[in-house]
Image (cartoon, rainbow, N blue to C red; front, side, top):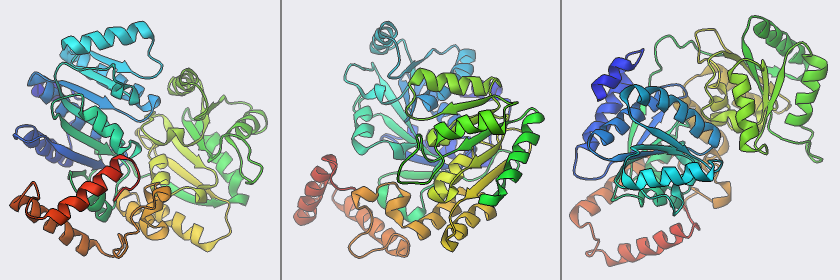
Length: 438
């Protein structure tokens, strides 16, 4: 079946993809369950790799589930999978919060009998009513958006299924070792051929007319544009443009000749789908959005990404947003509007002007902002360990991990080390209660 799938693909896998596929197939053939994290930059082709893993699981007589953090992303994976699996005569279904009750019942019963091999969905997959006959592989996309418990609950739907997690938000190596020490990490570190680098420019407030000229030029050539803002509605405290006001202003006074759409997190699923579909179908030329578009929206005709108040976003997040353009053959542009006078804001944004490498950008982000903020877990008081610094102490962290592996190799149940065992049990209980992360 995998050979047949390769024949369907209109392109050959890159060497990096092939290497990761080999890692995965080797894991699937071993007696222990796979626990692998695939990191790959925006557009490096992680989905194809996950599909090959799913085909391998199905061929071995198991079911596969793919869980994504948002309905928009789940819907997009579903479309892609249907186009491939239909040709292999394998049924795929989509389960989200907006799936109708009758359809939901049908999916539940087909999962229990085993006649449905592949299910794509959001958090809806971890509800108690969802039962699989033989769940063999769990794929989790954008894994940092799910909590430990949510990932664990999906794994509990099968008898120790293989787990493949994917992220396009590269985690600096030190963080990967400490946060995901239990995972094997594979990296897809090359982009498919023919991808052009995205031209990135930092603009100040006075450069707005230049940005609008570029947008007019691209749209009149038949291309499409994203305008991203940090807020949904106007805030009293912050002098920031909000998506709703900006949408109205752009439609009425800046681009009255074009159709401007709006997308934000407070819309219902149906409204979001409608907004994205009308952009995908070319009815809307300019889409004003909050960071809802950050992950996985794939529209090859979009060539300009204008980000307002760019200094308010993390570098990795800006890199993700930038990855929404540059997916077709045309030259693409990312315009970062900086409304801050601070020199540090400008220095941070310059990293994006100079680099397209998500791993380098993640490292720089961690240096500028500290690890807690990079992971979006400032609240959890994460990785400022008592002694170690995740930025400077990579060698110590690697040594600690090796030491832990040696301890496990000598005595997996830790009976020989009762104090370590007691401490770990205490921490694990706290962790499952959601109190601490490290």
